[in-house]
Structure formats: structure tokens, C-alpha cells
Length: 107
Figure 1: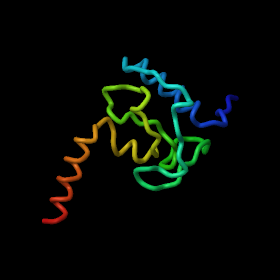
Figure 2: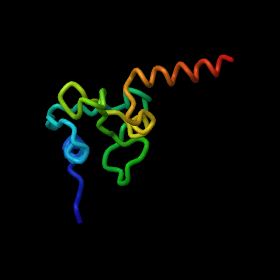
Figure 3: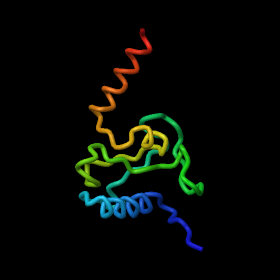
Figure 4: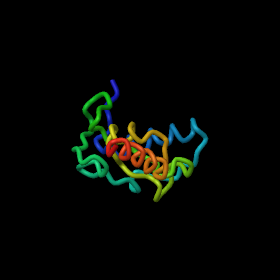
């Protein structure tokens, strides 16, 4: 039975390398380039590693600009929940989505 590495950064980088190869996007980070905060910087929920199946609180490696790949300066650790909400959108698209729903809410 395989066990997960105790340092979640190693797992995040290993999985990112696999995804980058599969998608044909740039990859150029090491686990030392990755900082895992205690709380998700987007949603403020605590990040929990090694709890088995990925859950809302699991740390994930997000590409700030999806087209640039997993390269230094273009990755941030956020919760699985925040990453699922973001999908592959860039920040400009997310702002437009938020503005749209904010407008609906104020109507």
C-alpha cells in the first residue's frame, strides 16, 4: 500500500507535473517553489492535507494564468473548493462572472 508523502508540496508538484505533461503545458517548479498556507487565501477555510480523498479543504496547486503552465510565479496553493469554482478561467473572466451575478443580485 502506498502512503502519501508527509510534505504535501511534493504530492502537489508530482501531480502538477503529470497534468502538465498530459496537457502539453509548461512545467518548471520544484516543491521548494510551493508555499502551502494554513488557510485558503481565496475562501479563508483551513487547508487539510492527507485526509484521504480530495475534499473541499484539500490543498491544490492553481495556475494563476492557465496558459502559462506550472512555472515559478504562476502557481498558488488554494483549496480544492476554490480551485473547482475557478475551473480554468483567468482572473479577468472571473471578474466578469462576479460582476454579472452582482448585477443580478442588486436588481
